[in-house]
Length: 75
Image 1 (cartoon, rainbow, N blue to C red):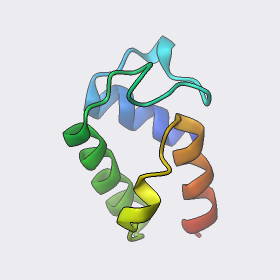
Image 2: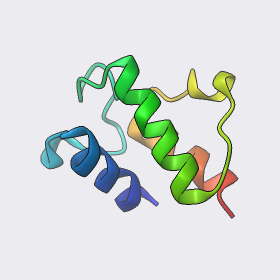
Image 3: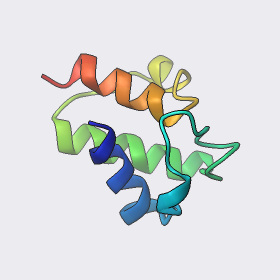
Image 4: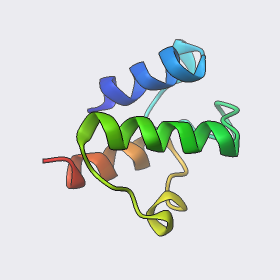
């Protein structure tokens, strides 16, 4: 799952591949802004056929947070 999220960040949001680690903060370390975060959420929803609640998005601080959420929700 980490590799899927990493690929989306690199390919779709132009994040530097070397910067993407499970501990990397989306905003603080990777420079993801609110529009890009919304894009990432939409990409995840489409790719994994899930719906991500707005309250859950607030918990997406690190790449690992997104990966953990997707591992729980995408089955």
